[in-house]
Length: 333
Image (tube, rainbow, N blue to C red; front, side, top):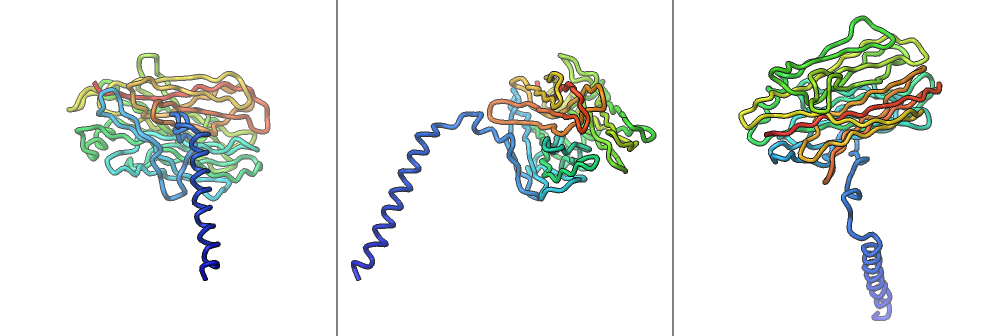
């Protein structure tokens, strides 16, 4: 009996020793994780389980933002109103974005806007013109809380400053601009929703039209277009704002931008300065021929930095376009 049991016991000991040696080798080869290694910029939860990616505090330590992500799956050709919930019960949703697909044909953005109760950010996407592209849609929501301000009070203040504005009659390339009261409020960011009915009308811009190097401005402009197939549509623009003067301090707002040169698949990154908290993501495509369509608008927060990445691409017709990414950020003084 002893000889029968000795074999399994020895195997268990050898297995345990081998596991320990492999773990040690992995640690030696991998070394310590850097901030870049830890940055979960492409991570998303399974559908129905929004997950927090990371959070960041402004220089005052009282403004906290967090990015949440949720993956809409399994792949399908059109996603409509996929909700990314801000799962921290102390936060509200004030910004966000989405990533569709770049290859092989493209899946493009048709919505990125706030829910009525500011509990989530809502995103939509689609393939186009017979080029079937089943895809998973990765949605992002930016959550905000301010120390010393109750969540319901913060939501009421933001609602009092935020507006939406639809475009007019359906058009091949509709445009809308929503604005905030600049005497009382500062800009947090904005969003868009394209109401398309036929083959599709796709976003090309969602950005702070009046921004400068020292101010985020007070308006948010959105644009979309049909592409090679007629589909007149309407678009709604959303401008998110917050009162300048709060009982806990004064809110400052800035816009940061970055550009990408002419290419068939242009990309751009807008980096936020230290001490500011990212609240909004935007992009503007400058196309010249048939068009370049937004497929990526992503807010990123990790241990050391915050930024927004934006990308567009042509579709079935060559168009070397350029793109500008925008990041809106605030701080409390």
